[in-house]
Amino acid sequence: MISTPAQVRRTYYVLGFGNTIAASLIWGVNTIFLLDAGLSNFQAFTANAFFTAGMVLFEVPTGIVADSWGRRASFLLGTVTLAITTMFYVWLWSVQGPFWAWAVSSALIGLGFTFFSGAVEAWLVDALHATGDDGPLDPVFARGQVFMGAGMLIGSAGGGLLAQWLGLGAPYVLRAAVLVVMFVVAALLMRDLGFTPQRAQGYFHEVRRIAGDSARYGLRERPVRWLLIAGLAVGGVGIYVGYALQPHLLELWGDDSAYAVAGLSAALLAAAQIGGGLLAPYIRARFRRRTSMIFSLSAVGVLSVLLMALIPSFWAVLGLIVVWGVAWSAETPVRQAYLNGMIPSGQRATLLSFDSLMSSAGGAAAQPLLGRSADAWGYPASFALSAGLGALALPFIWLSRRSGHPADADERVAAG
Image (cartoon, rainbow, N blue to C red; front, side, top):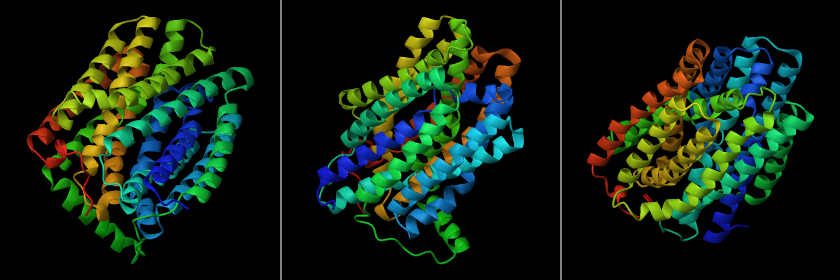
């Protein structure tokens, strides 16, 4: 039974590590997998858009599950849903299924991920409070980034090699198996602490409650609102660039069947995530305000993506992937701590899910556009458009900074 902050943190790291291995097994080859199934770039990234649209559609219902059944129940449902939908993906690939079936299955994979969004992070924060730890969250989230980066490195590199040796379907089958293992691990280790599930009073009542909480504690609070809108602006950029790098690297390398090379982009992002998580506390110490660090690293990320569009060199793009990944992974834990510091415990899961919903909505809108641009003008042009979309977030981060919320500099997190 978990009873100390150290046990809570260890459980969070184990869940993040294992889940990231499962998720990232396909990240290095997913676009190639979809193209191999007969989809065009537009269709492949539209299928990914259905994934993010599914996250928008199901975010509220699964948020109700987290609030009324508990965060542990939400996590367990997520592992089961993702395992089943991943195997459905494999079946569609094997039979060269029609586009509409890919769209439906992608949306259902989005359903699986919505069971995780907000629930695990809210579980961590509330469990730390319940076990007497009210210290800063930045180091915890940063170390979590390191463990997830390690999981991503293992998963993405392993998935690329597995696809090279056994075929493109193999990483998906292994992903489903790892998710089954994670179900057992979470069932044994995860307990809801510092949070009492509130039984739902009907779906539409809960939708109104969640919408009201999202408006009151999110959109009506200026620093939170601007941060959420910034997430909307860049929602699809990270997903698109990460997946489009796979075929782009193969083009630069000159061998369309070098799946291990395609997996290299995801592996480099994983290594960068580890480095960014380790560097985050040191970079944070150089900034008085969290938003200053978020703004600066976001600008570095935008510049990195723009340079990927302008420099047609395999090795230069590899270096830019590392820079982009370090900037993103060092920024993420600070953004998490800043957002958690601005919302009360009772609405934490709701607001974190709403943040994910905003990002997913941006992704659903942006990915078909970026995929079509890749079909029409090539991957470099689509990266230039991605950099432009990412730059739209910068003014909103600056507006959040100007709001002057105490959480911008305060090391403590909101507890009530």
